[in-house]
Image (tube, rainbow, N blue to C red; front, side):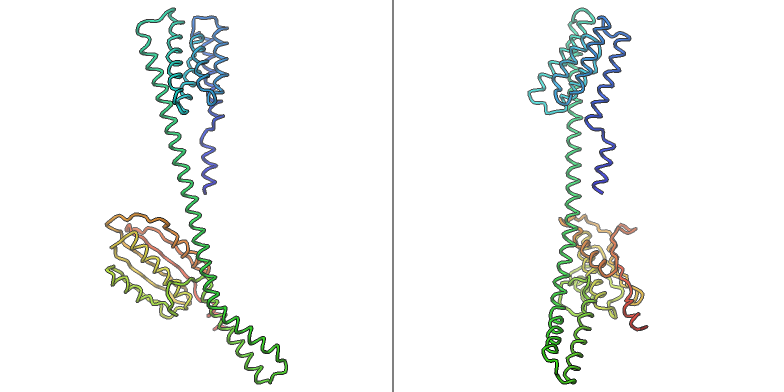
Length: 378
């Protein structure tokens, strides 16, 4: 998305070369008009030569704006074409002025006065005020445009950095979630795999063992392997919910939040669900209640669990609109990113979005237990 926005901005925003081409084209057009009309009392060849030289100088307006303004001032006096002078002053004001401001102001006033002197054959007492006004107007406009352009560029860069940081936080949240998955898998399965290895090793070093012992060891290996597979099914894609309960107690979780002064209503429960599904649902409710407390403190919250282990489970946490604003904490969305990763790895989905009443709705969907159905049918 960031790359697409950058490409679109490059297409819609003219670059420095495009602006230079446009400036040269405008000055060349004005030179043609100055020669044809003419705009100065001098011979047309002088008007054309002065206009063409100044027009060529405009190409270097970004590199040497003061020199372009000086050439433009001379060309204005000789040809009556103000384009190169105005562009030089405007471009110079667009850069960091500093000591350059005095030089640009002097060149601008001198250029406007020289043009009037050539046209009228002298300078009137009232010529200085229009020259000062015109010079100041061009410099102020150029400075304003340049400042606004720099501010826009700075804000755009900050927005792009914020977007990149958000993507980085999302990736870090996913990596942290997968790291916790790996730790849980190791904790639960390592000892069972070790037992299988020990029993198999005992049979290997005793090839002449009695049939009863072989049968007993094989049964132990088969039972341990089945337990390991069952545990694997339960924890793949499921992270620890922050407690050591074998089966998560959703009603106790809701009651703990309600006892702290929150208004929480529960519809449904996790009874009868597989442990993996129950843990995922429990984790979503935890995240939803935490986010409701952060972003809509004091607003009533409704928790619903619908569906069945065979048809799929839908868990929703909906909070009403808060009457008091809540600041968005740093690192927001990391919990939702990890939660979505948890659900994705077991075939589920998570979606969070505002509801029609102005509150927030967090919804998780988990597929039915097709493995058990197939086992029962087979």
